[in-house]
Amino acid sequence: MKLTHSFASPGPAEEVWEALLDPERVAPCLPGATLTSVEGKTFSGEVKVKLGPVQLLYRGSGEFVDIDPVRRRAVLKASGKDARGNGTASATVTFQVGDTVDVETDLAITGRPAQLGRGLIAEVSGKLVDQFAECLAGTLGSGDPDEVAQQQHLRVVPDEPIDLIDTAGVPVLKRALPVAGAVLAVVLLVVLRRRRQR
Image (cartoon, rainbow, N blue to C red; front, top):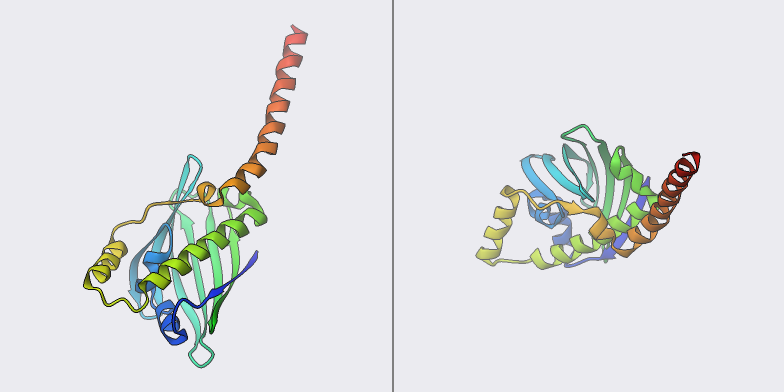
């Protein structure tokens, strides 16, 4: 599944570009994510995802496979799987920095999150990108020692899980209600038939 997003560059293009190439700098801006190690162009971490009552913990790694400083364009590949075997996720993310930050994601997921469907995943990812851009804008150019210390703290302490249903908000309810109504109708029909058979 391919997803495209674009947002206004939250600072000077060169500064945004350098920040996006630094996993330690951007990890605190990724909801649900915790960075565990960085070695050169590769890194590893985990992402907590909450889907209603179900909580998933994806552990995996990523690597910058192409970096073009002249065009300020980079390609990142990442993959992970749920600790309890409830699904996998992999993505190839291409971003380019100019007056805007343009992001294209080729995403493949299995397991429960895949049941959300393309439309809902696009809505959730769009909101997450907006949150990321807002957070990134707040951290760029910060020389405040307290703020830097807070970012270091966020790199070590596991982040709260990202709740996909809360993030989706009203749209997910609009999709869920018809399905719930259909299920309820089937259950009622079964109950009525059993009562008549008695």
